[in-house]
Amino acid sequence: MQLTKAFEQSVCVMAMLTTQTKDIPLGSYSIHKHLGASATYIQKIVRKLVVSNLVLSVSGQRGGFMLARPAEEISYLDVVEAIEGPVDTFPNTSLIGKVLGNVTDDDKISKAEVGLHRAFKEADEKWRASLAGVTIQDLVNESLDGQTFKTTNWNEYAPKNELLVKRLLKGGDKS
Image 1 (cartoon, rainbow, N blue to C red):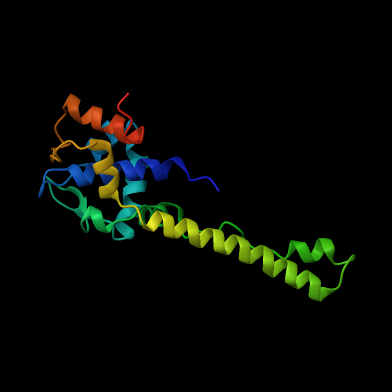
Image 2 (image 1 turned 135 degrees about the vertical axis):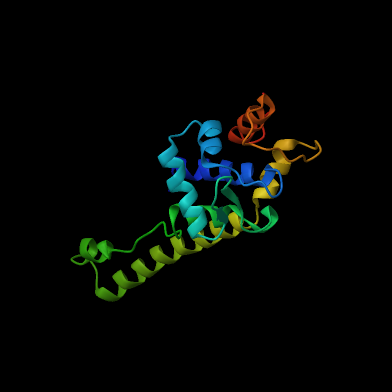
């Protein structure tokens, strides 16, 4: 399974919202500008985050988006499921039974299908548990690498904001 580009962009949106100055909504234009993605694409991503109750939409002239809850309560799994949907890497279509039906009896085919499905279900559960254990706040803390956490108003252009976005996209790498 490979996550889409939308997942990485949504994590960056969440990181921007985490570091956004308190009580100042982050505008969609600012998100689009800093991430370099099309405005309509960013709107679709943010809409999924809003529908999943990870982000609040604030209307009005100075409207935009804010986190719906603290970043330390929003896991990578929350974002994956908001953007990609529930994790199910093996859709059991009973193809094993169709293929092996002529060479073995139904009971053995059923056991093989159950075993195959169980293996992927267990892998999905481990993957979900791993992602559930890492939060958006963890990402921001790691990208800051011990530096003091400061909020910023992403709605105002500043080179330091661009540097933080680059660090987030590189997973905290300072190079």
